Amino acid sequence: MNLNLKKHIINSLLLAIGLILKELVPPLLFGMKPDLMLVIMFIIILINQDYKTTLLTGIICGIITGASTTFPGGQIPNFVDKIVSSHIMYFLLMPIITKFNNQVKVILCSSLGTLFSGFTFLLSTSFLVGLPSSASFSVLFLTVVIPTAIVNTIASIIFFNALKVALTHSNTNIFE
Image (tube, rainbow, N blue to C red; front, side):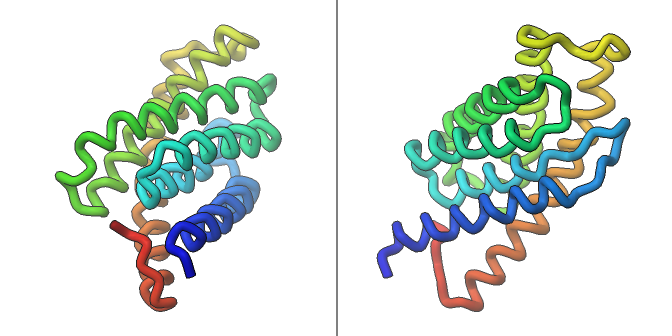
């Protein structure tokens, strides 16, 4: 089977798993849920290392998270956030991607990517619909985005290693 087709099938399965995880994870802090779709998006970017796939993944993740958000007025900010975050991570990671092993790449991508994503989400929300009156930008960043970055980093390491083991046992090598 063509390696490209294998990657597209795996990407599709990962996006479906991301949607399921996004819906099943309970709220952790102040009713906010960690965005595990980001974990999936960053893993897809790392696996493919391709701009077209990054763009398409950002759009699809934006649509999925926008459609399933529980944040009031968060549909458009979620869409903007995923597209911007996918691009930032792609253009930040591609120049340095060969200098690190896969574990370090996953940790860097998920932690920095979640911080960029949260910042972009809060910024676009504040401009488009306004933040909740009970919390400021800095309070939301400190109490929601930073803990989410920690959770996403741990989840991404676990998920990436599980994916790698599953693909190894199926004799599928998509890691470059």
